[in-house]
Length: 314
Image (cartoon, rainbow, N blue to C red; front, side, top):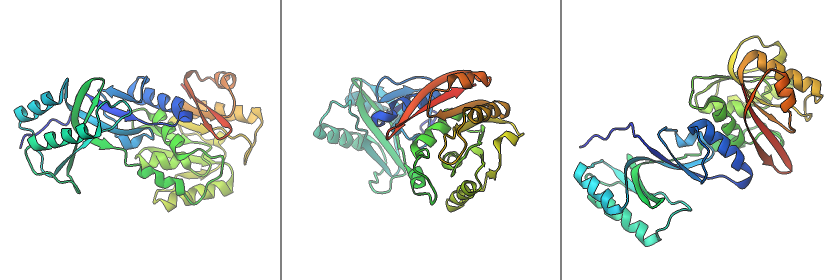
């Protein structure tokens, strides 16, 4: 069987987001791909596992990109494309301009010319086809497994903590494509950010001032089988250095709220990390700048009647 190069030169990503998370999605896309999508899809030379992102729904690593389906079929025949136990699916987007019958026909035609036995229920390889921007795209199909949604049901939480989706996006914004980054969440609460980083295999530690909340964070990590990386203590006493700090700035539900204490947290983040991704409930650009950080990108996200400001700082 013909061995296909897995280092595909181009990938197609289909993105989905609710309106209130559009700005957050675009910030994450800038960090992962270096560009802001103008539509709910993008093409990139970079490969990103779709399950990393809360916003990438599906993707195709492109083998062929042609003006017509017939050209795709001719390429498959010419290259003698072959797979054992394969399945072909159509990646539907809101930009599609072919009807249900035509989609079915495209799948049938592709499946007929690929050498090897199809396997609908338990395929070893899933191939994808779609029509976008007037062109047909065919390649290796992957979709977001959304397994990280299991963290929605962590044993301990509180109403104003970050959502799993936002926390996961923040981790991606923090590390970009360097999964070797060392992260710290020095105000980790019940560990929402910790869980998302650990689920992606990223090294992270957490610190929490409130002993009962720190204990709940430890219990959440244990519930999902992760190592205890939480310290109950004051972040101002942390001495070790990290690549990035992620902070959901305390605003008074369980912790101090004075501007002086919030500023001290940001200054401590400057001392222990090269980069900061911070979430605040008000514009704190001046405090961030006075702490020695430069804001290099910004976004926001809403949760109910709350609006959170997200700043990426170096």
